[in-house]
Image (cartoon, rainbow, N blue to C red; front, side, top):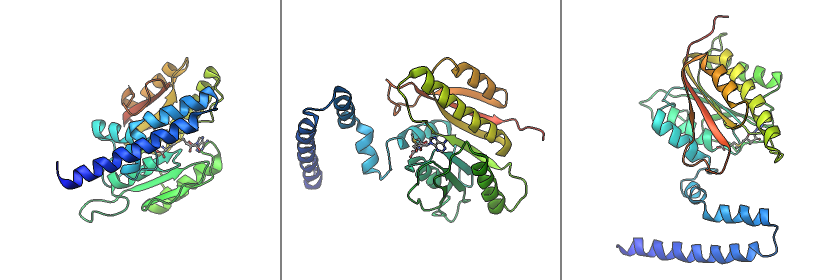
Length: 252
Ligand SMILES: C[S@@+](CC[C@H](N)C(=O)[O-])C[C@H]1O[C@@H](n2cnc3c(N)ncnc32)[C@H](O)[C@@H]1O
C-alpha cells in the first residue's frame, strides 16, 4: 500500500468513526422512524459514493445503472427530465448526451429539466424551475423551448423522456400508488406527443394494483417495454421503473 493510499484510508477511517459517533449521539431521544431513517442514511453506500462523484443525490446511480445496461443516452440526444430536482439525473444526461459540448468531436444534445422546486444550474441543462409538470402551461413552455432549440415547428424530436417524479408520499400505500400512476400517465401522454420515432421512455412508479395497466398501456406504443429495478433502488422500496424503447410513433 502506498503512503498516499494509507493516508487516505486512515483519514477515511477517522472520519467514518467520528461520523458514527455523531450518528449515535443524534439517534438518542429521536422517534423510531427518524432513527430508522438516520440509520439507513448512515449505512447507505450510495450516499457516500454520490458525494465522492459530485452527484447531487444517490438517485444518480439508478440512472447510471440503467444507462450502462440499456444504453439509453447518446451524444446528440434530446432529453426531457421530469422531476429533475436536485439535478443528479440531469448531470448524467448532460454528460452522456454531450449537452455541455465538452467533447467537440461528438454531437451535442439538449437536456430540459422540469421541477416543482428550483434546481441549481447544471452547465448545459435548461431548467423550468417551480413548474408543475401536470399543468398545461408547463407543457407549452417545454414545447416552446423545443421549437426554439430545434428551429422547427414540429416538436416530435425528443429522444428520451425521463421521469423520476414522485408526489409527496402520504404513507397510505394505495393513495400514493394512485398519485404516482396519475403522474406517470401524464408523462406518458405528453411523451407520445413530443417523442421522436424510436424514442425512449423511462418512468418511475411505486408498485401497486395499477402497475400492470400502465405497463400494458405503454407497451402499445413501444416495441419493447420492461420493468427495471436498479440495485441502487432500495430493495424495501415499492419503487420500480418502466423502460420502454422503440417508440412506434403516432399519426397526428
Ligand atoms: C426523487 S426526486 C427526483 C430526483 C432527480 N431525479 C435527481 O436525480 O436529482 C422527485 C422530484 O419530483 C418532483 N415532482 C413531483 N411532482 C412534480 C410535478 N407535478 N411537477 C414537477 N416536478 C414534480 C419533486 O419536486 C422532486 O424534486
